[in-house]
Length: 114
Image (cartoon, helix red, strand yellow):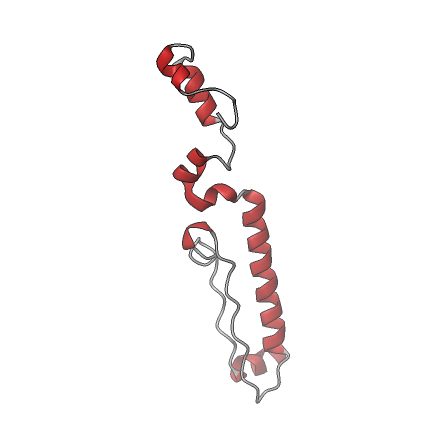
């Protein structure tokens, strides 16, 4: 009723066909109660949101690598960034992305610059 102004009881009354009802349900917007029930909080996430989360993860990883390479030799390495949480409680690494690499040791850094 909220989106189409159609009473679902019209299906029982014979004024709304099963095919028409199925089409209306299939094309409900993402913020509908049916979409939220079927897809949970991922109903709010479009491809754009997933791409933005991926970009944010990549930027945080690049900043972390820059800080790791340019830190003082005696300083503790910075903590690896946490990926942006995705719907369903999965992070980028759990969703199939590469996990953040371990910080390089002194030997790896020396080898890089030699």
